[in-house]
Amino acid sequence: MATKASPMEYLRQVKAEMQKVTWPSKQETSTSTIAVFIMVILASVFLFLADQFMAFAVRLILGIGV
Image (tube, rainbow, N blue to C red; front, top):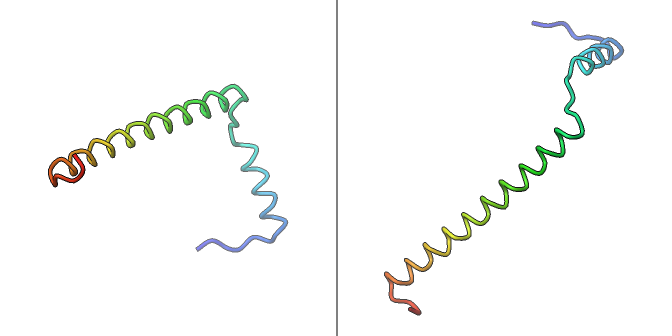
């Protein structure tokens, strides 16, 4: 079991670990953000169309409003 570090030692360790992190560039962050927005839009459109198709099929099967 690990021993507890003092608050100052903990902060030193956190600082050391933060220096090891490879941070993305501004361009990488922008590109990733745009990719996420595009995928969200595509998923939203797909789910909307699938929902509309299933609703139409249920109405057709049950004979409601068609």
